[in-house]
Image (cartoon, rainbow, N blue to C red; front, top):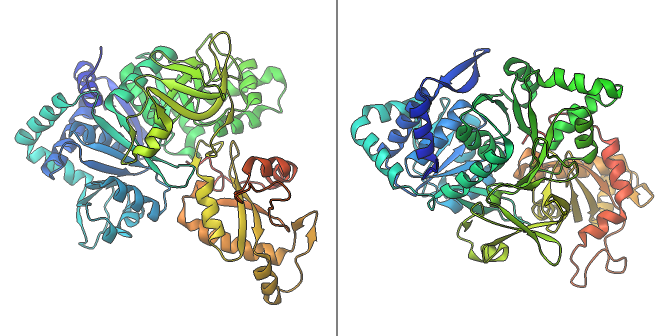
Amino acid sequence: MAYSSLASMHRAIAERLGPRIALRYKQWGLYHDLSWHAYRRQADRAAAGLVTLGVEQGDRVGLLAENRLEWLVADIAILSAGAVGLPMHAPLAPKQVEFQLSHSGTRGVIVSSQSQADKVLASLDQLPSLEFIISFDPVHVNGRIRQLTWDALMQLGHRERADASLEVQRREQATTRDDLATLIYTSGTTGVPKGVMLSHGNLLSNAEGALEATRIWPDDVLLSWLPYSHIYARTCDHYLTMLAESVVCLAENHETLMTNLAETQPTWMTAVPRFYEKVWAAVEGLPPEAHGPALRRMFGPRLRQLSSGGAPLPRHVAAGFEAAGVPLLEGYGLTESSPVISFNRLGHNKVGTVGQPIPGVEVRIDVDGEVLTKGPHVMMGYWHDPEATAAVIEGDWLRTGDVGQLDDDGYLSITDRKKDLIVTAGGKNVSPAEIERLLVSDPFIDQAVVIGDRRPCITALIVPNLPALEAKLRDLGGSLDVADGLIQAEPVRAFLAERIDRVMQAVSQPERVREFLLLAQPFSLADGELTATLKIRRRYILDKHKDLIEGLYKNHTLTDNESCDVI
């Protein structure tokens, strides 16, 4: 059945399935079931509450929270009220939250807790369009803005049930596939985030195509843990599973994932490559014949397939799972494509590729090797940025910024990134230009090149302001202690590490530089490290210093809190 909007899809499925289980969520140490009837009732009350607060069709409503049951209900409620959802990544820094709320002209924001509310309150004077905050947990705003708890919003919607409920249904019926459903801000290569506009049709068509490709059925059970603020989880774990009428179990967090796997015994799970790298590292040392049984013990006896996306999957990990008989299927996409472009299928999995385009999606390779895609999944454009939109959409084709190739069977392989945007092993998009801008804003740092594509964390090559640093040596004591072109002196490294940590407070945890190398010589035109206009030649520098970079990652032991796994 073709649905006219995401909200009407949810309502139709909820009315048809009624008492069947839609969601399972952990509370007080136990998993609890939520029926489709209860799911719809909660969404209706919250939507009516938003309407009663004055939210109009097309208004933006922010959602700044970690994964939880209320996140999913709030998303459906926003859509049912005819509004546009603005999901924000939970680790964002206050200034990043301010930019997204301000640039989008958001009317109200739903937060999870006091820590998230504080990010909004820190910039309240710069957010004239913001009228209210709704919180899942109790928060204090000191009377600076209208505030309701989630329960109070639901009660408000229930009290105003007659008029508000009729208005919700009217708005649902008036919403079409052409209407804007969500704004998702993604890092650009210039460091300025862009608001990707995705319509109801974009997301519905992508879920429909992905459903046909992935063979997910009503009796499937998904364990969901990736952040819903990312389009990967939102489409695949939220809308796709809804369309498939399967059960979604919410993991508590990434740290409890193995426990939650044992508790829920899913048939399917989506994850990013970094997770599968960790799992494979835990079994790789076993005899080959033990790999399959070990993986089955981890994922449970009911597992049918695993999906990988958000970043490139290391070939040795994909091959290892394949040889062990555990289906690990890699796909490919980006926020601007809703996101799925291609996906490997059960029984049709080519290791080293990202599969064939899903139904409804076209892919071709441009003359320069760039991957282009066309179809109903392609975004409406960037919010209030026609120039940036025109730079990536030519006619009906979206330029992905990735270089790839199609084989004779139509399987797509991604071979390089045309754009400089970093995608970490944890699936986090990071703008190197923005991080480098922050680094060189410190007076003791002259040049910087940020590293992290397909890596577990962000690192950097740093060229210090040598005259300033040498003057500082009188306070630090000793010398620069240069060896093999690197500054080795620990007092100098500690001094700069403190300053780097300070400027990194402006960005989220996964974007922060965790380790660095101090180069004793500036990048120069003569050495081929700069262009004629003195811009950094990033790829040349990374290739020139590849051995040092490999040593940097090899020697630096990451803790879970440091790694980009927490996205």
